[in-house]
Structure formats: structure tokens, C-alpha cells
Image 1 (cartoon, helix red, strand yellow):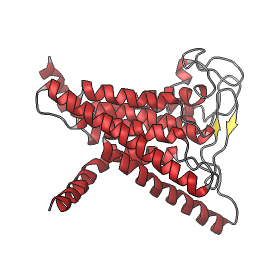
Image 2 (cartoon, helix red, strand yellow; image 1 turned 60 degrees about the horizontal axis):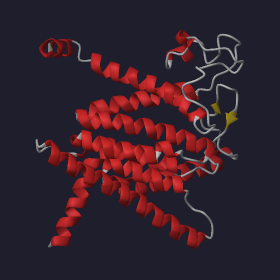
Image 3 (spheres, helix red, strand yellow; image 1 turned 30 degrees about the vertical axis):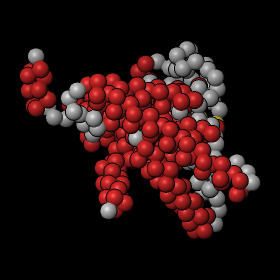
Length: 305
């Protein structure tokens, strides 16, 4: 049976990546629900998707990305507008799933899809509300440790002895969780003492710990300092825009919920640190883990000499 599947995949090499990407857009569609409903304290299961006018959205009008394009961003029932954020989140999640499939071995790719989904949701919730729900920080960290035990190859443990590999992977995951959250907590406390005001929310502390549960301690270092780099780029772009255009930067992906509420995030507005951490953490998991590991190995060699 497996030979038959292998033959099919050999004849149609595009089939599996397409399935993974489409599945990612479906997860992205569900994340849109989570992004709105979880901060509002609403169930993500009931009621089903519905328009601002209160009418349910039919399944054929709820196909990720395609339905929005076919309907030109408007509801079939009343003609109300739907934000471009909906297909953007769906497409982003689909592309991240494709990147996991393309760049990573199977076990790490599976764990990466879980991590990317949570980071996408946490990013947009933080942009909207300046909070990161515990389900995407503490919950994500617990899932990271559990997946490390069940799939030790996610942490690079592949000796062939499951118990040994699982224990090593769990240690790596816990170390990343503790180092990440502890390091960010100290940075937050020092920054608060210097600036005399809160410089970083506790949600950021928990999010870095969750990233570390998937990436190990090296990933937390990348997330913290890489996030700072992303933040600097964000500020520079906002300053250049304001200098050139002579006005504040435009809105970024205005969020219009199914119930018609709106939130606005501008390039020049106060932006939380969580999205920066998420971008850097995702980059480490997908691409940067190998060069970062080489870099720290070289540092270790210099210290040993």
C-alpha cells in the first residue's frame, strides 16, 4: 500500500505540498475565529460563522481565500464588507505550513505547523488588544514539551532509542522554556527600572518561553534579539514614511470582525513586542536554527581553548 502511495507522489510531486498549503489556509480560517472570539471571551465553536447582519455564512462562502476573492470582499447576504485581513491570515498560515513542509524534516515540520498557527493567532490578537492569551503562551509551551516527548526528532534527537531521545528532547524543551521566559523577565524588570514604566508585558515573557519549548534555548536568544531588530525596522519604516509622506503611516490590515467591530493598527502607532518575537521565533524555527547552532558552537570552541 505504501508503495502505491509513493508511486502516486512520484508521479504528482505537486500534490502533497498543495494539500499541506490548502490545509494551512483552512487552519488560518479557524484562526480568524480565534483572533476575534478568544479576547472577547466567546466560544470558538458556537455559533458558527455569521455575517454582521446576523445571518449564517454558508460553507461555499467560507472557503479560505477563494470565497473572499469570488465575492470581492463582500457578504452575499447583505453586501457588507469583509476585511482583507481574513484572506491575509488564511494565506499567511497556508504559506507558513508550506514552508514547514518544504524546509523541515517530517517531525519538525509537524511541530512547526502547530507553532506557526499559535504565533499567527498571538500576533494579530496582540496587535488588536495588546494582550497575548494564555492559551497561546502557557498552553503553547505545554504543547511544545509534550510534542518534544512524543516526537523527539523535533528537537533533533534521533539516536533510535525512543526513551532516551524523548528524555533528551524534553530536557531541551524545558531548558528553552525556562531560559526564554527567565531571560525576558530579567530584561523587562531592568527596562522597567530604567524607564520608570512598564517596558514589556508579562505575555511577552510567557510567549518567549513557549517559543523556547519548540526551539530550545538558542531559539529564545534569536527571538529576543531578532525581535528587537524587527522592531527597529518597523520604527525606521514608520519614520521614513512620515518623512516622505508628511503624515502618519497608513493603517495596517484593518481588522473588521464578523460582528462589525473595527480595530486599527498603524505603522506609526504604538506596537506591541509580541509580533516581533513571533516573527523572529518563526524565522529561527524555519531557517535560522542551523546557522545559529553553528555560531554558538564556534563560541563554545573559543571558550574551551
